[in-house]
Length: 344
Ligand SMILES: *[C@@H]1O[C@H](CO)[C@@H](O)[C@H](O)[C@H]1NC(C)=O
Ligand SMILES: *[C@@H]1O[C@H](CO)[C@@H](O)[C@H](O)[C@H]1NC(C)=O
Ligand SMILES: CC(=O)N[C@H]1CO[C@H](CO)[C@@H](O)[C@@H]1O
Image (cartoon, rainbow, N blue to C red; front, side, top):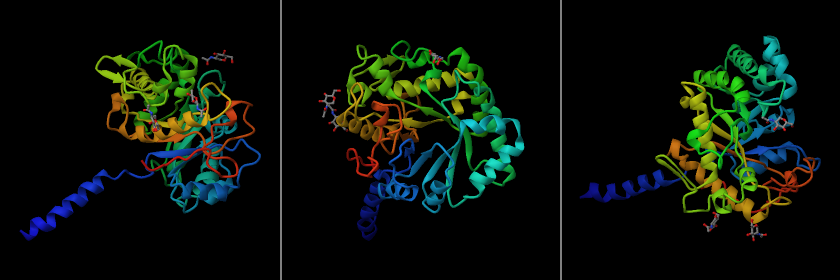
């Protein structure tokens, strides 16, 4: 009898614990620095902490940022800048230097999770042919430094690498453009071998504004209960899942072991001003729904949370004029553009 009386609340407690969200696990925010009025790095890191943002993507190797991140427990995606890629691909010594200076100097006080060799460099770029070798040289340098396999190395791609995205093609017909496949096939094969994810910048916003006649706004913002597209056994009620699953299919087609490579959503967001369907309500709706949605995975990877980084932390006044200056969750004065809860 006693056991049952004691056991009951314990069971309830356990169930409650299981129901608790894995706080801050899957959500990060991109710290873009294309503004001349942004807070200093130490204040930015404090802002991440006070908002329980557990991940940060940075597009540089700024020493002040890395020093501020020490001991913060924030997981970091750091970038190998475009200008450094060719050297790092050509010279193992350059890779070793980069790793020593930017990683080992701060490790393990800074929790580097991924290193992205470039951002959106596949297609139309003379550097794309160096990306895989740069990935390999950075990995070798990490190994020599004793942290091999602890920090995964990858690259970030945009939606432009996919051939005729939805609404032209359903996810099952997802495939890389030929010119992108040349570079991505060996990269995917390599990522499967190293158990690293592909970093994918996913913007339902762009697909929506280009196809408004076919895609009602609610489907772009996770706000629809109906079906946007039925694709064999899979049924989609939002555009984000369509785009991510198109990429999964393309990766499977590109390499026999492509299905082993997970996707990390390395950017996604919605502007709050100065663009088609860009206002605070829509941005808040998209980003809060995104935070909840990614816990559930996509139809083709159901139940598998997608690690996701929202673009971006701040409105950046040195981006091209228009909506590109209004992706931020915060104004440069650190006030929120709209309330958003990173707990789910
Ligand atoms: C390459 O760049 C040109 C000019 O900027 C653009 O028109 C074209 O769509 C791009 N191609 C791809 C595949 O991104
Ligand atoms: C935001 O835009 C949507 C249409 O995209 C519109 O329905 C809504 O009223 C707008 N909200 C505000 C606050 O302007
Ligand atoms: C119609 C509808 O479902 N609206 C919801 C869209 O998403 C926001 C943010 O989660 C909700 O507050 C709305 O109720």
